[in-house]
Length: 175
Image (cartoon, rainbow, N blue to C red):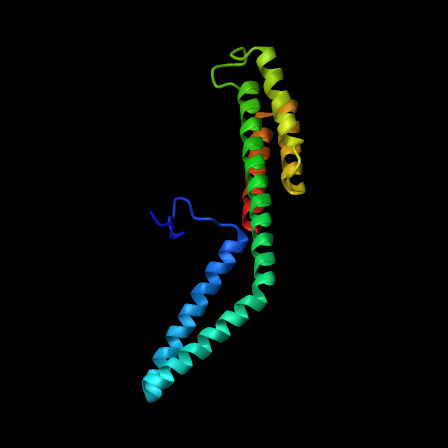
């Protein structure tokens, strides 16, 4: 079986392969455009001439811009990875703080969660808040939420959790 490289399940998405596929696509597209344009102007001879000229020009242009294209793709991949990491950490932090809140203010009454479980959830929430990669506004909102939970005020806690969720959403919007 011949490997054409177009199997979407195993397509290579490294910057080098993305660059070469983009270069090939531009070269073919411009060669076809040149061929149609040349044929419309003066027939087959000019069609071949225009196709070779535009296709060759596209090939030379993509070869000359390849290094910059690869750098741009790598930069975009790095930014996407960092943003994905920050989003994941922020989501886990919100989940941990919500679990701690549920242990401090259980729906089934104040004695529904024992002290050891409450301490374990508090420790987990504080550790998630201290994780690297969280933007400063999200970290501040998390600290305010943890402080409100520790103070034992359910109304202040609700407000602080809402502020935390807004901060996490703002982080996503700013990205």
